[in-house]
Length: 91
Length: 211
Image (tube, rainbow over all chains, first blue to last red; front, side, top):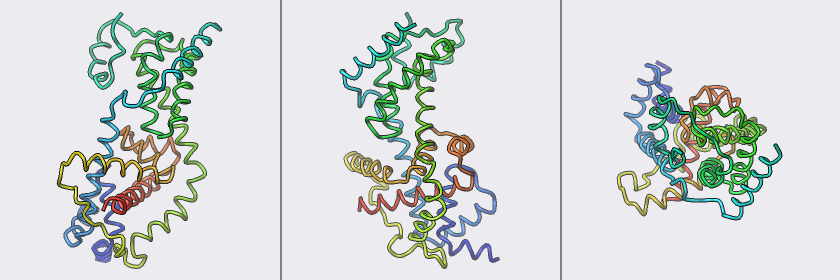
């Protein structure tokens, strides 16, 4: 009972479980605890919604960047190739 | 000569057909810069966000690759091979950035930080830190999204080094929790603490800068 009471009032724990849930499965007890908390807490429901969209946006941000969006400047590339040629000629 | 070089996102889908043929991949350092420099630079800069360091990393990757060129067996494409070398170098940087910060962020700094969000007695959201709607949760406004993304990027850069490294490895490269823990030398329980605090801070930063 004290465990239950603990989660009903504990947003710190609930947000922890919200994060954990998105990356790995919760235990049965954790699932129940989180569900009970979310039923009564609109702030954590909003947190969950925002947390999920942040993860989606971060994923988008990382995966849709075009490969040649930002390139190296040509001078640097020329010097780089020269350096490689030098190394190759050493052998 | 087969055109391996224009493969990027389609790489994984083509890998299968390539490896099922008897053909092996060739390697030609004379063309490395032309074919891979921009790609590798972008790979690096999206993960460390420092132009000069990203540039150095590209150079270091090519030089390291030259040293072990005899170990290239042609089972993967040149680009995959080079990217693997770069990736290890990036993880080295994460590791360097995170060592030393570890004690501060986990033991003291973050603890206090955490208490900023929640009441230390009952664990409730403090009034000032309660989540508020961003107002774009349900819209798909492209302009808004673009602006929101740039705030998101800035907010991510404000996270402490170790947190950002963990966050990036998880979300950008979908690395397993075990791998991240062993590479960055954090315990699984600290890993979850970091994931939790990184998100609390990131969300709070977005709320502060967007609304």
